[in-house]
Length: 487
Image (cartoon, rainbow, N blue to C red; front, side, top):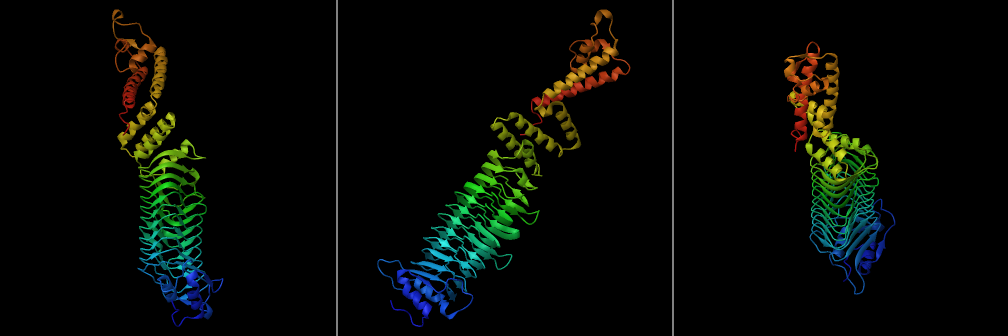
């Protein structure tokens, strides 16, 4: 196929090299300006991609260009591209448009451009923007990338604070999404994305302070999701209802919402096989794991935020190299909106690992925390149950109180014996211990209480023994039958 008229020298070289897929090198650096020897019209690249160039049997035709200054719009929207496009260290004056196109492999590495439009793109190979600087929005809604997504070392700067730097919805990425060591100013939107080969963002910095740094609602990631190894999110990481069929790692990451009243990590209703919440410093902002299902949680108390939302969170294993039982109670208490479920879940976990005593202590902590939200009457009775029987989890306390009161009564009535109120032939012999026991037990068991009456100051001791006996009996029955243990 003959070359079209009006081509400059760089364009003629590209047209000639296309059938064999040879790389045309116009320079080894990113062109600073429109040098005549490095100008290539986007129209020529478009025509080659859409089949205007000659092809030869036995070789693979491709557009491979380095160091070009590309003018005009590279627009293949809605077209079918049968050839690979590889642009290296090129400056594109207008954003490339691949909307609703069906392409082979696309590689724009080390380039500079004012955006990228791949809405509805179907790429049989991978899409690579690695090392490029993009001053505008990268659009990938409904894109299907069979060979993966590569944006390693990419810099994206959104055109305005309210704009997305990387916008997608329903993105499908096979093989894996690799966005390592990138620097992105503006939000990243992966809502509804499906990534079958994992998501790898190690070393990447997302800058969108006070806004959404990454929106991954309803995202599904098979394999690992690595927001780790110096990953930084300045803004909210929103992973609500996302599903991670593998590990979700924030190891050595930095999570900072840049506003203490905003979420640093919003991961409610999420599912994950394993969550590594081990950032390189304390999380700044709130964290929500409400109603999430996570098999294994590995974290550390020194990195927990000041506020967490844990109601509805379920897990099978908790792991912490430096956490104690007290730390776990403090962890549950980080959710300032009191709910029973986080305590019940923690107690169930301790029970599952054979720590029944710690499970009972969690239940006690639950009821003591709940006490602060009761009315004065309920709070008073709660204190009584706590002190006497430990809400039924420590029934031995009732026997300890009973023994102390019995010893006190025995000592008092040995010093100041009560006066008899029945004739000698109708009353048993007085015994201080049995008399005290008869006062403490709500039923007249030994006949001492009906035969003798305390006098003077010891009468008040008798009244106290009778009253505390009733309180202990009631508390013991309530505790043992778990009347006050909420379900």
